[in-house]
Picture 1 (cartoon, one colour):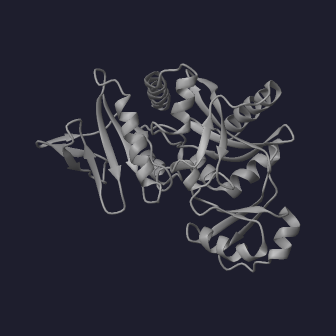
Picture 2 (picture 1 turned 120 degrees about the vertical axis):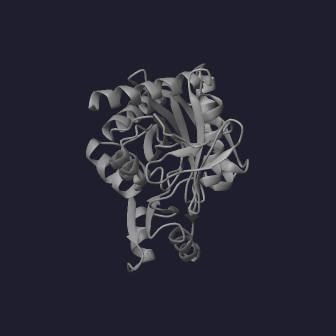
Length: 328
């Protein structure tokens, strides 16, 4: 069976995705599968094999030729962070080609990549969350009205972006315009959220052997004012697994994480972020293609839980194949 691990992408998250993809490749059973890396960038799509030989990918049918022989893929494992791998675009493409893939379907991917729409759906299910204001490019923006709705300080973030790219904390009016401009550099839609003072945790959730499973809860302790890109990827934070929280808080997080995962019809690996304020976990956002580099939170949780990452991949592959067979 030919397995493709797809990585890269069109956003600033592509470098992180390449690390995630190579980590995933290293944990696939080479005795059981023929494994290939597929790199999707704006200017080039290509395949590489275990010997680092590169082949151009045919976008028409997602295949490549090696020594005159055409090779297709039985299963695709998607590790693209950001567009087009986390926003539903590439999933819709694979649907058209009838190629089974990991993670969410195109609709759920598009929904969860849009922070505003995700909050809107979950607001019907009694999920605690921060107050928020949505704006888009061209809207009249009034600082005083925003402050009245969400208070100050508040967070300004692109509506559709990951890895905390374009996110700012506004503590006074003089910082507001720069924060808006930074967010609009990443997306034409912006979400402004109440700043929640509390303990930030990140929760790994997946379907494992057909059961929604919380892998672990990681506490985020950042040197910066919030868990921004620098804190995530440049050593400006401490990630403590398991989180130093009470049993009551742990039970609440398990409840809400599983409820969110199932309500949004998520499949595959995910990471859900909360801030615990007054003992209540408030939902921040969900990442349906979490980082899988050795330094990423999700693999840390897998290790602490004494789970085998290769087993998780095998479970996901079998889920994909079962779903494919049931649709045929």
